[in-house]
Image (cartoon, rainbow over all chains, first blue to last red; front, side, top):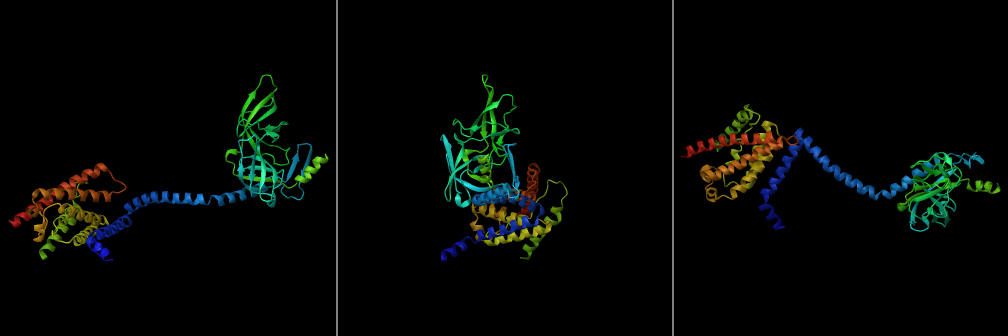
Length: 273
Length: 166
């Protein structure tokens, strides 16, 4: 303590100088309008950077909550936006939900395991039977179709990815459903192929390939991918299309399981038919 | 003591009533009152020097309504003066309780000390005054011309005091 007092005594003039300069600084930047404006502008520049940094850090820590909240919002919107009626294979038959229950529900889920390097890729989500997820339910990401549920236990479900040679979806392009299939030929990640579209059809690079009416698992209009290459083989009467998947399977993390509330009834009708 | 107070009053009066209202050019804004700080007695404690500098700056700020600018400049002026005077051999004069002047320090040391301090003071005040809207060319010319005029006037003061001693 004595040393501290001795130090203060010895350097009192420096301490006084600093205190008086602080007072001066306060007077200069609080009582001189021009200096005050300049100081405020400079201070704002510094503090806004610091505030942004702190906000970024806070946002980063809060990302999980935000994602969860966003997923809930999206699934809520999904329930409200999709029609309460479903037409199956256009003219085949038409079903209407007279009880006015939403035909499709969406259950938000997170991908806990994902493969993209196998011939038949799958991913596992953190929702299972306890959450209402069952076999043969569609799975979409925020960009488009992701896969179909293969099996479920209480808390987890395995889904067949679009990047699976067993996955087959009927494409819907430019307002028309083509009775062929989109396939993954195990050549490129995030790339599918469609064969069997007649050369008389008008197709362009960038056309959206989406789900049509012929699926009980997905509502109509969910993007599957975008036409990225059209190959015109001279000997064939069909185009070979390369489709870039709408969902990026490299970083698939948040998905929604699509629940068709009338799946069993519709399936029964189809089976009877 | 009365002579000292009269001297201070006259110098401050000369600054605020005459020099601050000089309308020769926008480039001339001489601060001669700092001669009071420059010529403070050598034996004066550092703490008192800072307090005197602060007080004198406050008086000048009240007259020109520039809160804090002259106070801050005067404090820096005292601090730099202390550093420069520590390098000069003035112990004997300090023991004799003499003020810093041409007579005690010699022409060259006094001239260089005054030159540095005057240039610094004008630069600092003009920089603080124009902060955020500084026109470098205008500021440099003003600092140089004002310092030159202030140096001349301080030189005259010193010459008059020399004559008085002789």
